[in-house]
Image (tube, rainbow, N blue to C red; front, top):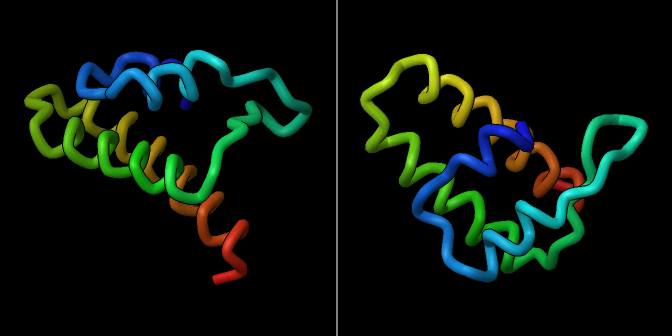
Length: 78
């Protein structure tokens, strides 16, 4: 997921700092963010995936989206 997120070209500077600030964690990676910043990052990933012609990269972005959405649901208790 980290590699897919680092490849998103549409990131604004704040989201890029979040992505490149990801740290290794025993479950994969830790992304320290606020709810608002997480939602914004999810939006960038969706926009990139929707405009990506390469199906393989589109699937990787889709997987990253799924992981981010799951994290948002877990954090919000949804």
